[in-house]
Image 1 (tube, rainbow, N blue to C red):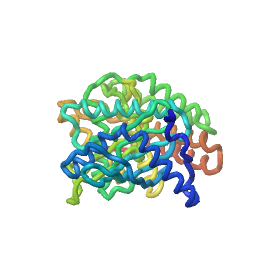
Image 2 (image 1 turned 90 degrees about the horizontal axis):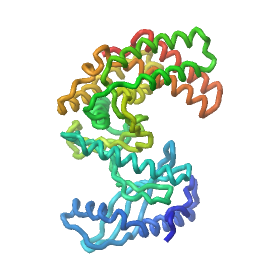
Image 3 (image 1 turned 90 degrees about the vertical axis):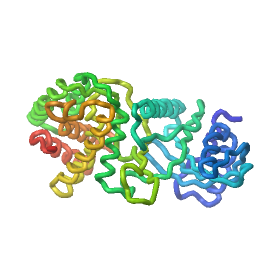
Image 4 (image 1 turned 60 degrees about the vertical axis):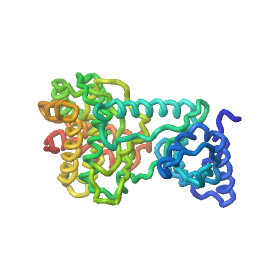
Length: 378
């Protein structure tokens, strides 16, 4: 058997010819058949949950897939039809391919997925309905991962009130961070402030000094806080899926929050809890301000997020965010820093064009307003 059983599959674009799609489907079915012993227990669990009977043998009969594209690669959402000694069955899996073709990248994500799973499992008590997909296959010489399939909707597409979404994300992020308190490593933020400010393209020395002074005031808040933790690293709405467990009215109790793609999960402690929060909410604050010259709706969602986060901390007997940050939750600092980093990154990734310059300048202007006016008030 090949060390890379999916290596021969052509990861083609959506305009494939019908013949190519048929050939790929055949290859996919054969490949999954070769590696299926690695996720046999998962398939049997699915059957047992559905029928109450646990199969002893199975064989894959057919597969169908939907391809989705992300920042680092593509994901095939696959329905597997298989025969067993208790009848014909179906289950879902997800195969994530890495655009880089690197063999190290999937192994690293698999390792971080297991760390994230451990964080969720080790909380006492655990946070209800907060999960990450289990890894079913991670070949050491394969540029892909196989995850359990999820019936869920993205943050944007889920038919759930925005306040409830924010509340659920707050609970999930608290589960990631945990109850332990620790000092915040100021060197990290001094470095981020220096880099993001010095690298401001086209900014005058005066503007850079203004940013440095405003950021400096907020650094004092971090210095006096025990809010250090191990962060998710790059939390955004694309990392979140929701699945509703019943057709009843949507409540936090009947929705599962899935955290996916932990490729930037950090293992370093001493990172401010609000860094993840600022990265997540920065795009929502920015887009609302651009569209309405107001941020009141996102502030309301942020309050629900805090309610969810603090509720989890309370079950652990840990202090609330306002107690962890006695001089004020530094959301204006972290949203501003995230906006500057994003603006600079846009120009690095897509080049200096009129569009990226405009997007960058808008972010700089909004970040300055946030810092100068402490615009986000709870």
